[in-house]
Image (cartoon, rainbow, N blue to C red; front, side):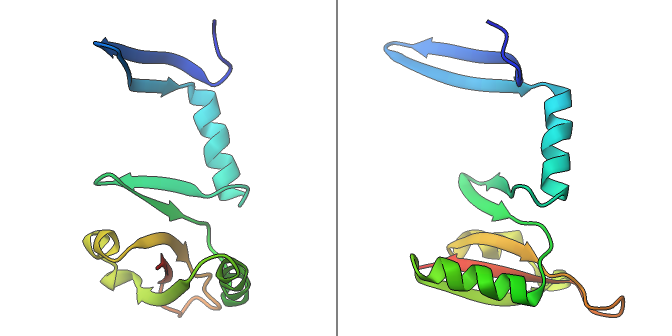
Length: 120
């Protein structure tokens, strides 16, 4: 069966275990996913060293605050702002970071800042 989104799936059977080794997504669907991400329709999940980190689109300070307040009803969330030049992916992996949100700049002279969300 040909799937709308997938060109090819590579699987392997080892004893009684089925392992999905690779999934090739159709190029047109990847372009659609990129468009949806840029249009703020979805976030992107990055898997780095077996850890998932959510990368969001740019948000204003008030959008971030509203989002964090909504999350705080369900989780113990802490946030910190990090200058783009000081952002280190290794630090993110060691600090229970779950989401990185680029901050919208108010003007062209503002530094690029990321809001880092952690869940305890």
